Image (cartoon, rainbow, N blue to C red; front, side, top):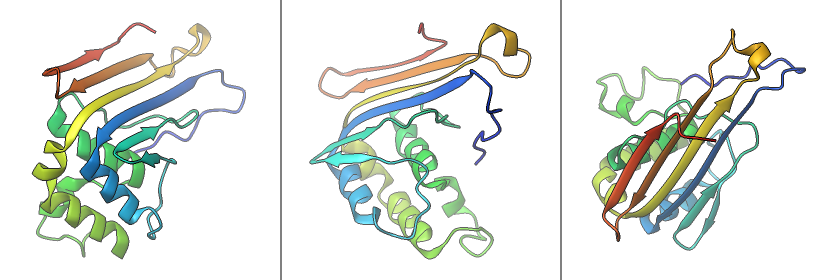
Length: 162
């Protein structure tokens, strides 16, 4: 996973990711591993079945376009783990994950359908804003993914209005 860390200190670029999710099973999974030896990228709040993530000046490297991608994108953002790696014949020996990351990945991979099916709602809003004088280096991006099981709605919007 690549995380952009090379903004110059005098840059006025800003990035963000704001996630609000309602999922009892994913909330339990995150709470179970909260104090594990996992290099969490960003802080997250879990209250009952609600998960909130709102880091300052942080950019997600992968955003979901459909509900089946939410778990993978979430774990990549939070813990720098790629669930696709679990299906590799070299896993975990051929990867640089520690024991707790491997345990999280295996549990999430084995329970992927149950975890995804437990998602009641998601609001995933991510973007990068670059001032006009810096546009040569980066490009403005803004994506939104919304899902609501009760309403039966799911929407992905790229380059959504700010």
